[in-house]
Every structure is written in C-alpha cells, then in structure tokens.
Length: 115
Image (cartoon, rainbow, N blue to C red; front, side, top):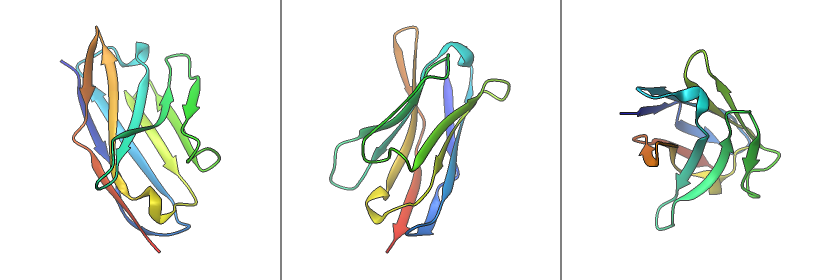
C-alpha cells in the first residue's frame, strides 16, 4: 500500500515562491512516475507536472517556465518548486502515482497566492 504525504503549502504573495514536497512510503518509488495535480475551488482537478523514473518531465502550459518538478529517490520524495506564483495558482495541490495499476493520492496541501 503506497502512502503519499504532501507538505510545504501556505500563503504567499504574488511573485513569490514555494516548494512542495511529497514523501512516499510503502511502494517502489524509484520505478514510478510521480505527478502533481491541483484543484481550484469550483474547477476540475488538473495535472500540473509529472516526472518519470528516468527523470523525464512534463508540465502544464500554465506553469511552464515557472514550476520545476524533481525527485530524490534516496528520500522517496518528489518536489514541486513553484516560482513567480500568480493568484490563479491558488489551489489544493495533490501528489499522485500509479503502481500495479492502482492510483494513489496524497491528502493535498493548500497553496494560496494573494494579489
């Protein structure tokens, strides 16, 4: 059973930065593609960024050039460095992975960007 625990959210002014962390346990982290998703109030959850076991990355157009996803396999942790934050980045951010055809989600961490 994979468990994902996010941390690092908070309140930041527009233009500021935050780094989110997602610590994984109970699985084979280093083989899994890890993803960050977000859900803003009244909107559908959307994929923000992903990183494969080979460290290939993919980003939503809305965050390209501002967010960086990375992973530390020794710590079973994936990170999301968020720079130049905008009010529209306000959302609950979730970590996700798929292992053995089962989808696992973290509990989410709130990011609020004030204008």
